[in-house]
Length: 97
Image (tube, rainbow, N blue to C red; front, side):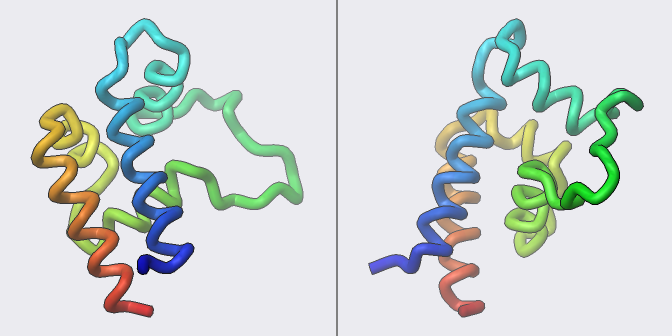
């Protein structure tokens, strides 16, 4: 039985792949691409807000496989390959705990 941490990571990475593959006119797809490429200056967080974002968490999940957000975005277009990446990431997380 997978741990809660593994399940959350699995679902987070699956959602990332789903958003990447969604139509580029969708708001969530545009926001993801803007966040990965070059976030606008007005996207700054107010003072005293946590610096950890969803994209930074996904990036940390993918670091174990030497993937950055930009390369992960391009690999997520191939569903089968992305499933392998997600499965490997969650297996590696299981060994780390």
